Length: 561
Image (tube, rainbow, N blue to C red; front, side, top):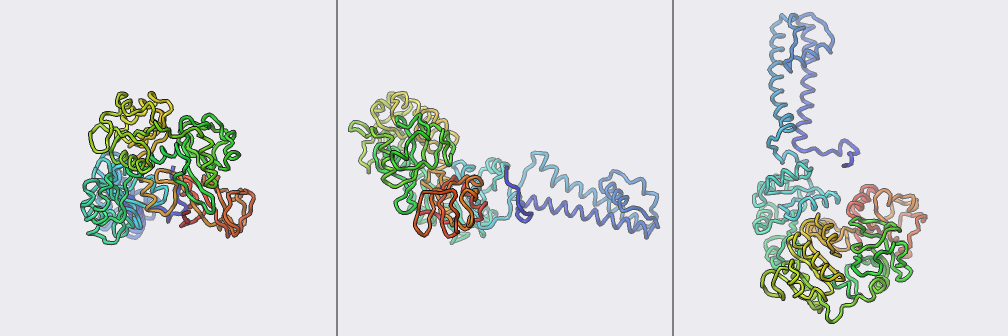
């Protein structure tokens, strides 16, 4: 349920809602004028004095044509008859206007102009098409408190999203008028995701504004230079990033080197570690894991059953697919890898299989080739770089690729049903193999985990995360992560302790480090009183960080680099 505005001035009404408010206000004013005029005219022209409420009743009866018999014998002056006739005519006209403006749109399926639903926009983002589940990106922008307008060429999709409360208009991103309707003159950036029409879209935008920031998404990384030359300021390739991320996770499970760590300062770092099949921690409660005692690393959060816990429940059981959020010195984080999977080494006869040689699979293969890891690629088409030609949904093809002795398989198939079936087959043929999968639908993430995958990334989530990073200078562990790591001044909690501040209770963020004149420490004493000169480092989900900004009125927040 959305929060109610704190002040009436905070309410932003769409064009249609503003018209309705103006209409109702004007109607009330007109009825008041008619009531006073009739009451005064009756007294001065007819010599009849009556209550103002009786005059109000007469006006309402007349305008709604429901009758006014009790007053008809009182009139004799011509002006009274003219006034009554005018009241009747205006009442009929207002009745038709009310029917068209309010009644029909509310209670019938009449066509609605989506432009009329938009509230006034300024310093907003215009999104063209967005083909990767628009709701995921729009929810991401909402959590970041970024205003936006989505231009969709599909009238049905635009209507559906608008009915769900999103700021959407119907139009073509190749039509300059669509951008004018989206108020490009006051926008801060444009995000394009229009496929083959991307170049046309960029040229249309540049014809209207030569300075506006253009962020372009593409599924073909080879188009990067062309799109930059056309006029794009930033080109993002979500499939390439996703493929590399999956490859990094596959490699990290065989090697002690860490990937995707963020330095807090000094020797302290933060990283995410997914728990795969065969990990010695599986089945252990977090309180009994002895991670801190054995490695020096601290668990500050965990993704459990798809939900982020900050801090994690000490009694939560670590399962396959759990993702731990750890902090500590680099050596401590490496020691964690050795502690949890000391026997998990890439043997000479092991290999990593990449199923699907699209943008995702190719990015994964290139990354692992640079790491000098044996890779076997599978694709249904015979193309360059493909080792086994065939459908990965076939157990014969997977066996030909060496699934029974492989250390991991990266599934980069564009079809989610094929991904789920390949996951089930791979797990049945090799119970110890690590399975890393890409899904096109965010809702398929849990299905893939249930099917036996160890690590799953969705294209919509990665794409939205990449866009959000471009729009807000805030650090996350990776484009595929929903974790934010922020550094903020302690001024709002000056004079109070961390326990008294209620940061976690009010926002869901957790303070994991404090920086003062003596340096950075991860030893966070909840009873320490802040002077206001310190900085605190927080970790939280997108929504939690947004709540922190609202609750403690901090804008902008410094990002941790």
